[in-house]
Length: 207
Figure (cartoon, rainbow, N blue to C red):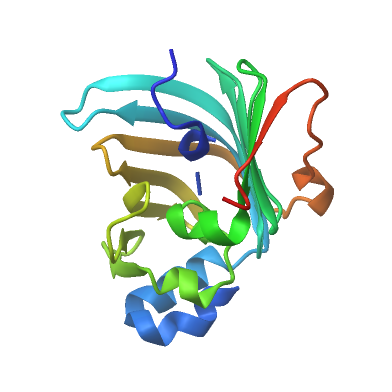
């Protein structure tokens, strides 16, 4: 049984350079670390826990980023799901439900710190407070309540992101541990999503 929001499970987001002064040293350090490469691909293990630490779900998949606006997260186990952002729209595909939900990129990127890793929009980053948690860790917190995620922790190993901790408004915590990280940037064609025939389409872009 699925316990997480498909959009959130389906994150992780070159405008940070423009706002480094706003966030001080922590923002400068994070922007340099995150945007040192044009993109990356990695396998991940996701663990979802309740507020009291109980494991609700474990899954595996692959995440790819191509900056400034391309993002892909595919969960392969135990249930398949796919999240693709191409800079204009965000597609959330659930093969089991045979449903595709389409969101506006500009609107949804402000609700998910995962997508902030590829967003070039200064106004989006102005919604978050960035703090350093040691040499290789950063905390990103939503300044005003209202999003699906309240904060995110980004952990590095060398030049690569090694772990993400995503804290949701309902108390759940999703941890993404990355393995087999490739610093080589994927191609734009890897972020194309063609809606399968026969599926239900819920287009939220004009709502």
